[in-house]
Length: 279
Length: 295
Image: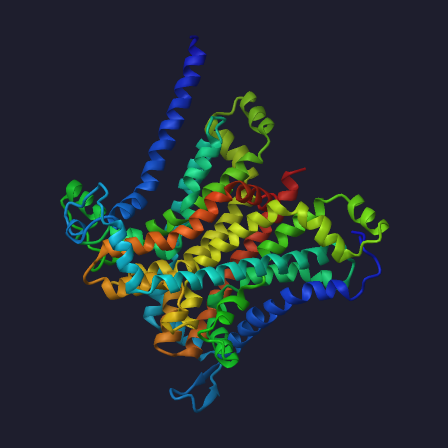
């Protein structure tokens, strides 16, 4: 082996070693949490802490499931996350279609709309937004958890970017064939947008499942709480007793849905990110 | 741009209407109300409301807790943004060094993105639990010092910031990888041929080329460290001990929904808006400069 080849090999081994070690360091907190979720009460209190899994995972899961009514919380989170995700996809496709396929004065709104949504995160409007929900009678309803989230600039810009790359021949051909714009949108553009739809699905589902502050203030009824707030319910009621094995069993269940969605659709997600970062 | 479907006058308005309506009703109107409320004060029982001018703002900046909360936020956000972004960039650079397994590493690092700030906070609260945490144990083993984030403010702030930066790693790495892959290899090679070292090539060629990605991530991470981290703080420290981790959004929440001082809270909202708007405009400037580079 020549000197240069050997150097190249060593260089690659060095990079892989660094990456694997970094990866282990990044994954370790999660590993420790997973181990904790499997321990019995006695083992959970051990100091120095146990590093190998125990056998009590299902016991802990059953315990936390009943203690904070986790089934109901997860159901609420699922309803809300799916509804918001689908709603955002539909609304942003419609808007992006309008902004890319028609000449109309409303097009001037594109830039202000995207800036407004970036500049107005929940905390800068939280008190009146809460007041609005109260005056609509929406507190402790799915409406409050879903409708205020439905507009998405991320989606609007993502689809706009993609629609602009579609060759003009397609809409022209559709027009010649006598198809109207909506027909063209549904039967030509939508099938072409599968990857983007999937990418946006991941982004918005993860985002919505993980929302915390808004659900915290607009719901007080335990039946309308979402899974994230379940974490708070577990820790504030159990912190003094520090039943970490029970808490972590709950945390594992709560983190699972977004994790599954992300891993299952990672390719589309990566493509979506690549598109976003070239906009 | 030409209209691809000429002759439809009403349809495009109908198509954008739902999005515009949601943004107007749930974003713009409440924000305008917040600005309005910030100039008024309502009596404790909500019976009278009177105009007080800039009083709420004067109160904000003359309250030591608020100033402290502002400094805490800046320190916290600085740690999360600078620490998190440099680690992510380092990892992304290694992953994109023409080695095998790029796809594997991408997935292997991205998962922290799926964890909510609250879950991340929970995991790190366990790791540094004063009684049973492994982090507590390891630090005691190395330094003989037992840290307790329930009573030590600095420890709590550092641990919370680490948890937050950790939570954002997956997202940041993914975007940096995408950004780095868009840098044409010829540029780096040309610089190398001209005799520039690895270090110099990176800072003078690669780094400027990914500045739109960096600017975008700076903004996203700022929004994260200022706002989205609320759940993390709420499950980890609840602003404690002694206000050491009470960042602005947490203070705002307490003033608005626990202490029920809506007008004072709305003035805080407006201050937050000024910070976000400045950051958004900065990001926009850097992002639009990209056109110059890509030519």
